[in-house]
Length: 195
Ligand SMILES: CC(C)(COP(=O)(O)OP(=O)(O)OC[C@H]1O[C@@H](n2cnc3c(N)ncnc32)[C@H](O)[C@@H]1OP(=O)(O)O)[C@@H](O)C(=O)NCCC(=O)NCCS
Image (cartoon, rainbow, N blue to C red):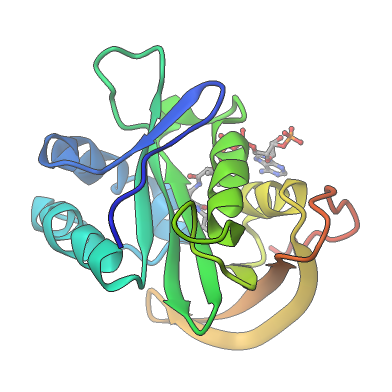
């Protein structure tokens, strides 16, 4: 599908571009990114280049992944704060993914971005992907990520034990899901927190 730009009250979710490569390379060195995401580690400039010039355009073109650079509308330079995506789109379902650099955290940016991206995921084409289901997965200690999914209305679905090898170690995966037919009411009853 064609790239679709999204906006919210504060944010512009735009196409990741080559001038973002330096920022992406720097942010992906961060300890939380290494601990909580599946980006390569060590992360080099070549990984950011492949992400921006190959993976992201391929995902959009193939309809298998939609990825946006998160920027502030009132930042004339349009600097990238982070990335949000619906990836692994298949058979009417997709997975939510996101990260922010330290400069973007702590002010509800991802909560706002995810709300808009979820709308896009469930909207019928051409306004959106027309999905039936979105899923969220994270290591159980990722409380900040879980909070964002809870606030977007994701329902707790369980813990997949030793589901992945993360940085070479078996890790449980906390799982939650949201259906197009679900209300978006924040879900306060789940918190997959573990040491
Ligand atoms: C996850 C991430 C995007 C959150 O960014 P953020 O700027 O803190 O997000 P927001 O401000 O939109 O909201 C975070 C919410 O989590 C809460 N939170 C943040 N850190 C927390 C923690 N350690 N424990 C519990 N809650 C936490 C915040 O209080 C806020 O909730 P509130 O609005 O009810 O107060 C950011 O921490 C990040 O990029 N982490 C590394 C990558 C990552 O984990 N990606 C997700 C992989 S599944």
